[in-house]
Length: 393
Ligand SMILES: Cc1cc2nc3c(=O)[nH]c(=O)nc-3n(C[C@H](O)[C@H](O)[C@H](O)COP(=O)(O)O)c2cc1C
Image 1 (cartoon, rainbow, N blue to C red):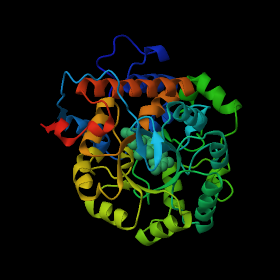
Image 2 (image 1 turned 120 degrees about the horizontal axis):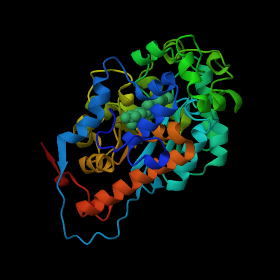
Image 3 (image 1 turned 90 degrees about the vertical axis):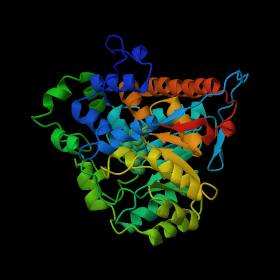
């Protein structure tokens, strides 16, 4: 995602941000570069990352006018829970590194907007705190670890904290090749090296918050692995040493049974896998390539959506995850047959730029864009969107 060519003047304050690209600019300005590039970067040549958003331009919306669409209902039901928008906040790791408010900001905004959010296995606020403080629909993103006691503990903690769903990430059995992180030396927690020292020194607000507020922790893991103890490790090393590359359908089914609640597979891309997910009784699948951070050269979620919806849309809820930067992207995913769209960077740039106020502004913009696009399409409710609203270029 490059700088927004339509921006007039530079983006220095939250009030200068009118779209997701603007929040990205502000985040870039306010973060030490290793942290910004961890959020913004992806795998290899980042071809898939770029395609994730560009894919939405391969179809056009065809509006119907004179539809009397003054009142628009953007609400829907996702995985059995009412959602005020057909949009979810995808689980993302390490949020207190991006801004000291971290997952607390994300959860508070999700609750305010009445939408789903997820916390990562690698969240910096605990499952227990999130379960206790925020009542809205929430999922635990599940990394399947080699350490089976850790897997069991995560399931039990999600149950005790009354999480609404577990999403097993299936596209990350080893780490993608994130070259920006290699160059910047990004680790968790961030380690200041002679090479990146200047960047941390040039962002004192970030550095002071990071150093003097609540200590960095990965509370869902710290009882089991060194990564939660404050020892700096790269995400690549963490994934490659801790996650179980032997993860298979049997293990996924076992996890679903142990959990016993609403179950989602995150990272399904092929029709064959979507069918297996439906056969095993998953409630939802997130068609996703991890925001382009894993297998570069793989297809975009939106490019795969149509064939997956055709194959299993009547048996499992299909969520389009990745590349969402505009309300019209959400409408295109829904018109193709997705139950909802979901995104990470759309709120992460805003979190990094300005904490809870930033996330609230970003999600407010997305809400306005969805509502306005529905009005301009002449659609009063989500159920009125259909494939007939789209034409392929
Ligand atoms: C900084 C960052 C951290 C992420 N951490 C996780 C994670 O811990 N677990 C996971 O399943 N996906 C993770 N993701 C992927 C998101 O859940 C989501 O699939 C992705 O952000 C969608 O692409 P988008 O950023 O273009 O919306 C992460 C993404 C980003 C950008």
